[in-house]
Structures are given as structure tokens and as C-alpha cells.
Length: 155
Image (cartoon, rainbow, N blue to C red; front, side, top):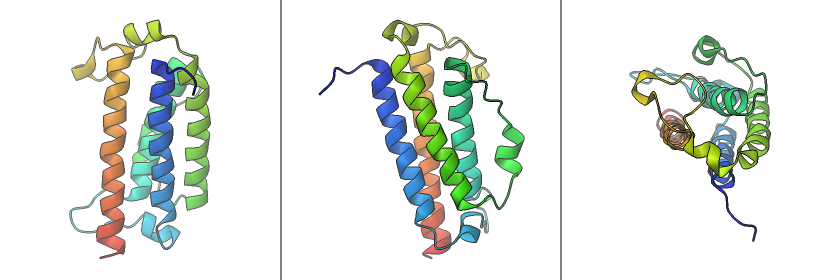
């Protein structure tokens, strides 16, 4: 087993959870159900998937990895009926970007202030603290996707 670094630990967690997001989307009976909303459920699984990937591609890819990714947050919440295959492609692309960026960061980089603009409540956070926040935020939405599928599809 190879030695663990902070970057490889984060890469492992995000890769695991992106894999779970892909599994959740694959568990829907068809593409239309991924975009279904009902009652007080306002965000579809598709919307959540776009947002989850957009968050990571922006904060990890563009900010930490300088990939050139340009985030379109409005599209994350406004696009509809993106085919499942495209969502899965984006998840795969995100996994590849994170696999390149996170293990390449030095442990020292995680102790430094996050180099990008942060939400007000997180201003001044280290990269380590902010990535902990992103991981929690991701898994919170992952749980929402799971409940969305079970409530609206499995009934």
C-alpha cells in the first residue's frame, strides 16, 4: 500500500462519492425520472448532480488545479433533461480531474489559505478546512439524491 497524503486522502473520498453518485443515477429506471420533482422536492437528482460536479470542477479543478474550467452555476440549477449518459460523462471527467489535481498538491498547500473566493462564512479557511466542507456538502447532496430516488421512483 502506498503512503497516504492529505491530497490522496481527499482524492479517495471524492472519487468514492462520485462513484456513488454515478451508481445512484444508474439506479433510476429512465432519464426522465432523474429530472422529476414533486411536492416540496424542488431539486431533481439531475440538478443536484450538475451542482455537485460543478462545485468540484470549480473549486478543485479551476481554483486548485488551474484547469481553466469556467463554472456556470445558473446552468447547474437551470438546465433540465440533460441525458443520464452526459451526467455520467461529466462525473467521469470530474473524477479524472480530481485524480490529477488532489494527489499533486503538497501537504503544505492544505495548511495554507484556500486560494479562491470563498463563501462569507468560510472566508480565511485553509484549503484543508474548505475541502472538508466540500466533502460534507457533497455527501449531503448525495443523500438527497438517494432519498429523491427512493421517494419519487420507488414510492
